Length: 162
Image 1 (cartoon, rainbow, N blue to C red):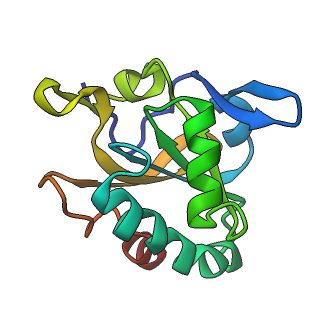
Image 2: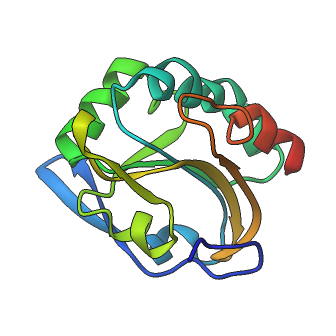
């Protein structure tokens, strides 16, 4: 079942690259007592994700933080090595976006955002969405249903909702 407004985010273990290599991070440690925008997308280095979704949050990051957002987190079903390379390639980290890997699709499946398209190599990938959580509770949820489209889940749309 897809997560909904008013629901609490589930506990999930994500990963990122640290100084010594891959590190795990719990979702609750990122959201507890904080106002966080979390956005998910099908994959690092993929078309719309690289040309529209991540750039929309890069453009909106300062304004979102000015409205009290503590962190903007991008989650994709990729490994932390790929997410670190994508962060560097896009400049997302420098723009204030935390790039996290959901390598086993744990969070993605727990919130009902998973989908698969085996012919193109997408197995248990994430639908395109953006949500605002306050202290781990979903306050805003925007989901793009159409493949290759980033409208409802964009940084600009989230900025209007915050």
